[in-house]
Amino acid sequence: MNMEFLQHYWWILISLLGGLLVFLLFVQGGQTLLYTIAKTEDERNLLVNSLGRKWEFTFTTLVVFGGAFFASFPLFYSTSFGGAYLAWMVVLFCFVMQAVSYEYRRKAGNLLGEKTYNIFLIINGVIGTICIGAVVGSFFTGNPFKLGEMNDVTWMSPWRGIEVLFNAANLCLGLAIFFLSRTLASLYFMNNIKHDVIYERSKKQVLYNSIPFVVLLLAFLAIILPGKGYAIMEDKSIQLVPYKYFHNLLAMPLNTLVLLIGVIGVLFGIIKSILKPRWKKGIWFAGIGIVLAVIALFIVAGFNNTAFYPSYTDLNSSLTIYNASSSLYTLKTMAYVSLASPIVLAYIFYAWRALNKKQIDIQDVKDDHHAY
View (cartoon, rainbow, N blue to C red):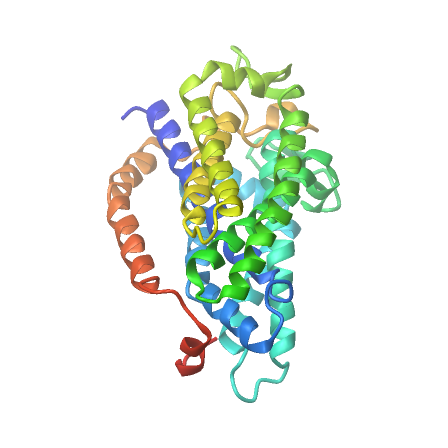
């Protein structure tokens, strides 16, 4: 367990958490469909309560993802939150709005009314997914910052992180994540809700949202793969190298295989759900596929001597898994703690199955005194 091994080990764990987070964003995607799939108040309550059983998984995964990043690569955390704090504050505020909305949406005597909280949920679903996708896109396209001698960060843009939305590649990835979350949500509704009309509407939304998702993802890859990437040279300097991320795919064939398997899983789940009547398992194929695909993309961004959080205003301020990581002692101690991860994943699996023993219907919502 030397330093280099631990740095790569923790980047893989970060990648796994990122993949799980992107999958769980189906909750946000489902919130944007409240007035598309549902046409009556009972149907909206059914959708909200179907998502309400899972929203805490997304929120918790986001917190764990941030906490793991802070513990293993603290310089990224301080640089990103210290400089691009407006972008992160927007994301965090959206998730606070979500938590408040589920808590007070139908609570008697709430001042804002049910419709207002529905709007809050939609805002969380739209802005939260696009911003997260755009921030991840900046792992490939870069950010405007410079680090001082004591690693103090100077952000070279007055937009403080919002500028990630002004980049075409970042915006493509952000919108791709948005449409992906809506696609996964539609697959989830087909699996989780016992309602024939909602099933058929969800099936249509799988088609309507998967097409722009695929187009936007291909557009992102078409910009990134043939473009210049941020490479670590032999003298530890950072330089722009043409086709860097494409070369990363060639240099790591196992990771490329994981990416292809993930893409095939997503497409299989989507296509079979559209073509086969009453098939409800698409969420699992697409969900596992997207986790694998995101893991592979994170590894492309951070492995093979690549800066995972590059600076396009000062190349040598770019962050890598080598210069941004914690100490050997910290990484090793956390590595031992991380061995308990399978227990946590097993508990999540158990809790998920307990909540999904049977499909939810409108009567379940009406009979539940603690319904959202």
